[in-house]
Image 1 (cartoon, helix red, strand yellow):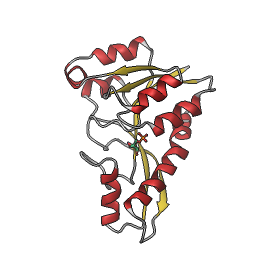
Image 2: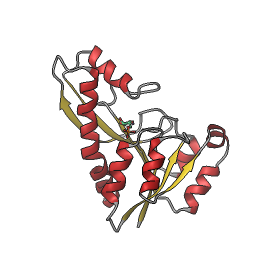
Image 3: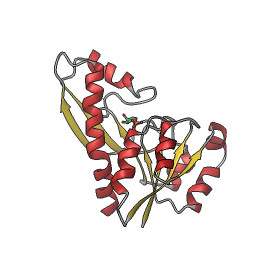
Image 4: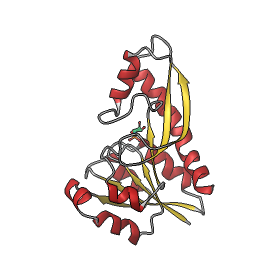
Amino acid sequence: MKNLAIFASGTGTNAKKIIEYFHTNSHINVRLVVSNKKDAPVLGIAQENNIETLVINRQDFYETKQLLQELRQREIDWIILAGFLWLIPDYLVKAFDRKIINIHPALLPKYGGKGMYGMRVHEAVKAAHEHESGITIHYVNEHYDKGSIIFQEKCVLEPNDTSEDIAHKVQALEHQYFAPVIEKLLQS
Ligand code: GRF
């Protein structure tokens, strides 16, 4: 059995898809949902699905290894970032070498890096008059959006697509691909 911890800061629509996808899987188990916001909707989604939750604070996250202990106690094998906005500290990257993955709502290396999240990404894509956008699933290292790429999928953009339209197209790809890509990666 491979145990996953999902880290998420926000709404958690991707976390929900992943939880539902692996619900009946006998090899992959979503064991824990970690959030840096105590009122994040993703925590409610976890609780509805009887998944343990953990709320972390910035000081402990960066200055102690308490979280690492929590993850080890629960025998977590993989960390899935699904809308988690804090940079992953060195000690976690080292302890989970090539076992932390993130999804980014654009075609990296474009439109990534610090501060590039949420609608900011889609607004930048729109401002650049891109003809396509998409998703990138990648390994996580100690730099924002810089780990090696595992998977990308594109969507076509029309000239009159608004940034909201782009967000919807990209989110549809996220919901379609993230969980199956995780499954394939963990099987290989
Ligand atoms: C997604 O767009 C993902 O690409 C990014 O954060 C967002 C999370 O959305 N890393 P949600 O909370 O899963 O709806």
